[in-house]
Length: 432
Image (tube, rainbow, N blue to C red; front, side):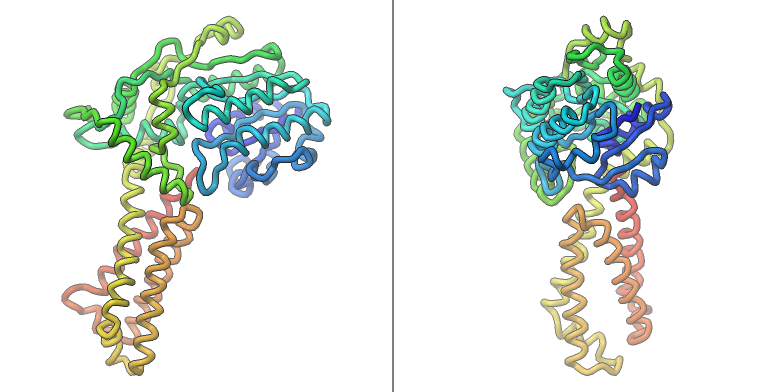
């Protein structure tokens, strides 16, 4: 069969694609970054598409005209600069279904979420439910799978949040530590998707994919901490809900600039309502149980890479913040003390006007880069700009005022670690 996977480069979507390939199916994938996806999964026929803009059946006809099955693994946690929940979860799916029906696609498999409901507290759950309703209203065969908290070797979303929390040294800060969740290994989601696509799950099935027992957030984080090989926390600090609201509102603000923090308000609201489901239907259809949280961790031993990720993910917001503040303040101070900045070039042979022009230009570029790194789609390029501009500064200073290398305050020497910090941050800003 030829199967189209929407969101084929996502956490779940990529594993679904690999599972289909192993089963001998022909796989096509839809992704917003198909070039990168093609380098990592070259066996897949990748198509570029932004589901925020694919709201008419005509946008889908060329994609579904030659496929047998469509699997929707696309999703977003919260509205932001690069996400639109209503478009991705509902309107694009509705348009895709119309195109599927007209093209004769045999079955549509929807990856939804436990707790998705029109009456849910969060836009994430409400828009997921709207998409589910569109699937259930379709005239074609369909299956809906509702995973709980998906755990995978790859860290993204909820999995990344657990690892980030587990990496906090010495203490364990938690909000709503008693909230209950049921987990599922990503391989069990992909196996269920394969079964649904191959017709081994009856049409019209609406299945929760969760372990039997629920776990508290405190238990999950402690288990993740042990799995990563970190020392147990000396003490657990239960933060008040109002402080969680403050943190999530700050994360929401950065979400408007394209940052997909797992601490945004939608995530906390989902957690507040618990993340649980009923494993009974899956057990009766498949004859198997989803692995427990402990069994999932035991099936994917952690390595140095997981420990590095957890610690560096915890540090990334601080690195971006430090770089932004450093470059903005450097520019502001230079503009505020323009004459002093120009005087540095006085012995280089440049005129006073030229020195002031160079100092002002550098200051404006500094401020621009410091602001640009705060915009997620620009952040990696801003880091590269910081590296290149620092090299220009160092080369120019070496030619014009070489004595600055021997400045007792190390004005040029300090630029070297700042350059390295920008390089490291740029590397960490690769999402997947």
